[in-house]
Image: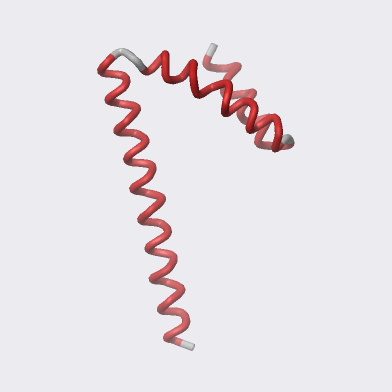
Length: 73
């Protein structure tokens, strides 16, 4: 049983690490785009894709995306 819990803990740590690295990479890309002055253009390209994806999912996802987009304007 302890071995099984150990494997679960290692798995959880690895998944958490991968998620943290992905978020750091996304943040770094956003900062690079901001410094280059291209963040607004990137946002204009990505926003319609995110809105369409959220609309297809519906429910809470759509509500959150619409709220964030509305507050950004």
